[in-house]
Length: 91
Image 1 (cartoon, rainbow, N blue to C red):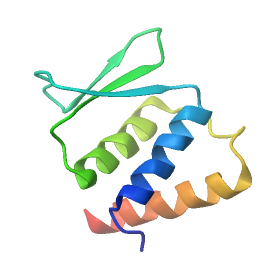
Image 2 (cartoon, rainbow, N blue to C red; image 1 turned 180 degrees about the horizontal axis):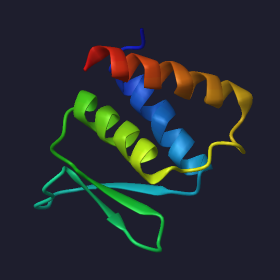
Image 3 (cartoon, rainbow, N blue to C red; image 1 turned 180 degrees about the vertical axis):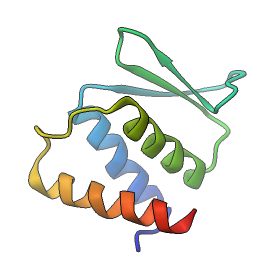
Image 4 (tube, one colour; image 1 turned 60 degrees about the horizontal axis):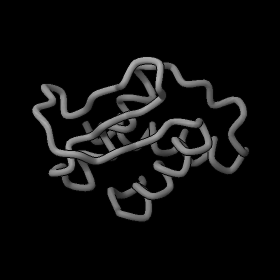
């Protein structure tokens, strides 16, 4: 089971970068904790979120928006699959 660590958050941010999606951490009144700027591939996440909430939010965004992970390196695909299983089991 993968842990909610800064290292895993960095790995997830790297995957978003490979998907050409910019993540910004800013303060705001986001009802769900994040905002997606339509047509710009920018995700804005509440900067006051702890590491666990940031990871859960990024995983939720990946699931809900169906980003294509086909072009990711095999290592990142495997890591992402482990992370998805880990997040599902911890909820």
